[in-house]
Length: 66
Image (cartoon, rainbow, N blue to C red; front, top):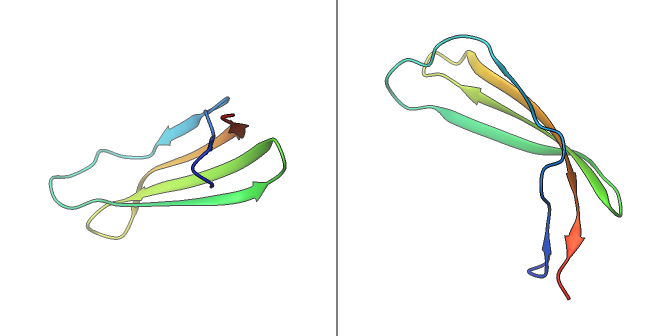
């Protein structure tokens, strides 16, 4: 995104699948689809064993600072 834009989250959804164990966690996020004013996002948190700890989706509104 350009420096003059930001995207506040309108509708976050998180599913916690299991407890996180001590150790390193890996977070991955991606833009599913981006339009002019709205973008759809997805992410996941992966435990040290490679299995998902949590998954999330969100809708964000793209805004420009003038």
